Amino acid sequence: MSKRVLITGAAGFLGSHLCDRFIKEGFDVVGMDNLITGDLKNIEHLFKLPNFEFYHHDVTTFVNVSGDLDYIMHFASPASPIDYLKIPIQTLKVGALGTHNLLGLAKEKNARILIASTSEVYGDPLVHPQTEEYYGNVNTIGPRGVYDEAKRFQEAITMAYHRFHGVETRILRIFNTYGPRMRLNDGRVIPAFLGQALRGEDLTVFGDGSQTRSFCYVDDQVEGAFRLLMSDYSNPVNIGNPNEISIKDFAEEIIKLTGTDQKVVYMDLPKDDPMQRQPDITKAREILGWEPKVSRKEGMAKTYDYFKNLSQEELFKKEH
Ligand code: NAD
Ligand code: UDP
Image (cartoon, rainbow, N blue to C red):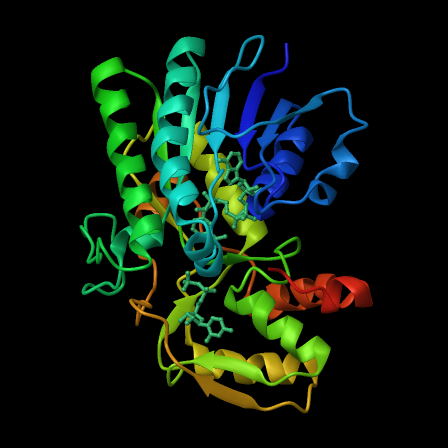
């Protein structure tokens, strides 16, 4: 008998890649999404498969799935700063009420659940690189607080279900992950820069560009998520690529990659934008035997290929 997994956020960037991976592993996959930031085109190739089903559903309302479930991957949530600033209440609700509903479903179905947490639980970190033991530095009432605190609540309620109800839980702390199927206009730096280069616009670096990020290719992230789910480890695990770069240097890399003759323009740094971010992945290495395999050069080449193949209409489409 095949194992059955529910993936929330299935029509989004990471969720759609997870659907592909679990299908490849021979699972029956139930995707769930309310399409608030996702797109059915990311999973349309799966609709013809007998082992894929899809529920168009908002997980902040009661979640029910007929039949047995062995696993739940809870990935539903706006994930880019401009998305969660545009829909702050929904962001809080999906991290809090949505997670509560899915933990309840996991308990009911006796399923193991993995929740998608984030490096944002560390806020603007005062410890570098970030280990799982660091408690973080988050401005609760700042504009990013809606996302960071929803994810921190998500971790807290997950551990409570684990300790109090004995639910099998896993907590994945995802660091900046990129690849094909990111939404062109989601405002995150990689689609932003690639979109600008392809439209012949200047690249917008926020602040002086000295802030750093460490970018992980999607296939590596999915491998880490899969291994964590299959492990017996219930404390949080960082999954990300420790190769750190400043945003200013990254803009120069994009200029080289795309061959654009546009220049870099500097704009205001958004409030509470973390200044430094790099995962310490010792735990992932030791517990999961995982480390990233895809270099930024290789991952960015694949990602650029994806964005290059978008239609002109998609490339110039404005979001409101
Ligand atoms: P995404 O926006 O592409 O995907 C999120 C999906 O969740 C979308 O399809 C959206 O429609 C769906 N969704 C949102 N609210 C929902 C609700 N109430 N009910 C049902 N579906 C809902 O973003 P992503 O990058 O794929 O992120 C997926 C998950 O990973 C999120 O939980 C995010 O917080 C986490 N994460 C991602 C990154 C990253 O770098 N990509 C980093 C840290 C954490
Ligand atoms: N950023 C930028 N220009 C853009 C979009 C983002 O300089 O057009 C910066 C942003 O301020 C942040 C970094 O790139 O310092 C990564 O931003 P992203 O939104 O991708 O992820 P997050 O801030 O959530 O890590």
